[in-house]
Length: 119
Image 1: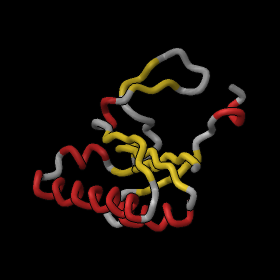
Image 2: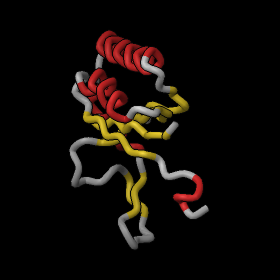
Image 3: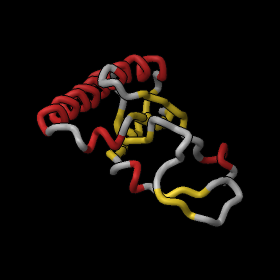
């Protein structure tokens, strides 16, 4: 199986101000997503919801100065991720449409592991 990271981008500041009943509906969608992954033979190996983007700390390329918050140039911030092992990237992408229906952007990256990473 190949390991992938499913990244979720959206308005993380607005998310934390969302009423609890709306959050529950979104969490239900995430439950549907993970259940569908299992039904289709994909394996969730990790993941996390991240706090407000304003809690991030950033370093510009080549900089030694730490700034508070995310990159100001981007409107969508990383709000969470899943780690998924699968043999079928196309099907994984199909299941990811469940998450994109919430209004978040979804980006999937293959993880570099073992010999590929030079380690």
